[in-house]
Image (cartoon, rainbow, N blue to C red; front, side):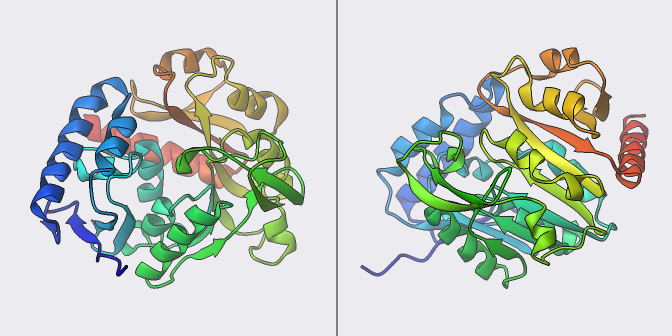
Length: 320
């Protein structure tokens, strides 16, 4: 069977091209549903989108995120199709830091890259055309990650492996492409190689003297990944780490705060600032939904602390 060409959608203009009438109607449902579901953390949205997807032809949609960034995924995918809603901002706190760092010569280490959304964006001209290394263990996800690298001129690097506390191997399992994990430790699932963050230094892929933004979206092995990167994280790095809203003990944040030399920072929507955390109780207020993940930041770098302070000052001036 000859694959259908991807549908094209421009998030800036809202123009949808290459879709038939049924696919256009579905696009309206996807976008409208996202707007409605945003008021309750998109609860149930992915399930409904995936049901509708079953009634559509199998094809991709290529979304133009900006003039220099195109991100493709299966049309109707319950996790990514929210991007048809032009008011939807994916991980706004990360986007704020990336956009504020356009002039910094840094490398993005994109662990748990999935289909490569952030690698596509960070390597684009409006985000500073930064070097990005996209790391993804899943064979199915990796194929889509490679396709997105190719769509964008091969401008970011890809690695098929998981991140952990030590080199080795593991089994990757799960039912959703955005929630696959090596945390289970069972005998089932896809066998995948495991490297550490410091392996990137040992293998000559990066220099310990560089500047890095390290995104860890590794589904339950965040602490193990941190343990595997002491040399990288003691330098000019910022750890961008997901913690789940259902974890009321704030396990990842507690580890960063109590067991590492990193300062713990979190975006507070009340102040529109990246706040330094000294008491974990602030997370009880910020993590309002048990169904989604929240990003927490960790850094030991004076350079990045100064950048974050300047970002906060700029945000305060914008509100005046």
